[in-house]
Length: 330
View (tube, rainbow, N blue to C red):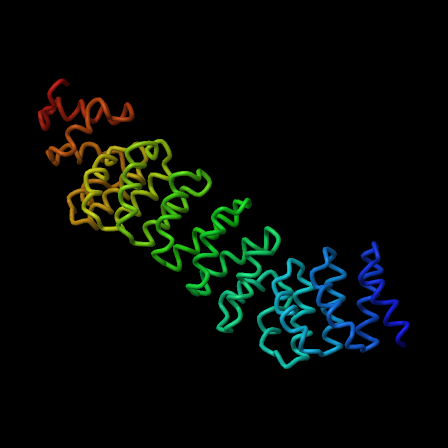
């Protein structure tokens, strides 16, 4: 018996063959020697999926509570079979709740994010820190749903992850958590990370902090008008932030060639107390005519040379011909 255990331990620790290591782990579980517990816990971190799966099963057979922490971490393993084996093993220790959360499906991480279990957030943080790329993406998204403020610093660090999906999920989760610690990091991402700028623009509106107003306005006045999607998100966030500094910049995009940008700007202005434009900007070809008919001096300078399309210039010429508007220099 002792010789068998010794040979299996040697195979688990020293064999170059993943198949042999996996067989050694299974035999150690069947032999029932508690001296194998620590080596099997180490094997839960083996690079091979089959070895980790066999180690989790073996630890379930041995039923030594020293294995609980390692098995908990395996609940967020990148391999579905390993996750299910870890949940089954924990069940033998009386940790029954995990089998309802983790069954080896694609929804495992999402269910952990929605779980009320006090250790769920810790497991997700472990996955965000040490998991493979796809698992880090899921963990970053799930941490937002978990609503645990302890995740904020980890999500801020994840915004520098080499995996673009992780960075994107981290930013979006910070928007869900709405913690003021995230404002400056999200502003930096908005200004410096072209991959994250659109998600960051939305999140800055969700965070509701006045520190975001100036960067959003600067981008709206600079490059955002060339990117319709980014422009829409900035305009929407400025409306959510409710700062009067955004009124003039929002008026400046009422003549934007993209109809949705115009309607979003009008809606944001309504939220800021300037409801005139919501009645005149409807996202159709007559927007410029209705804007011009307002005779508001804040928009007269937008018309004429700044009309973006030939149709808009025709509308403006028509108005002048009808005598409804006079613009110097026309």
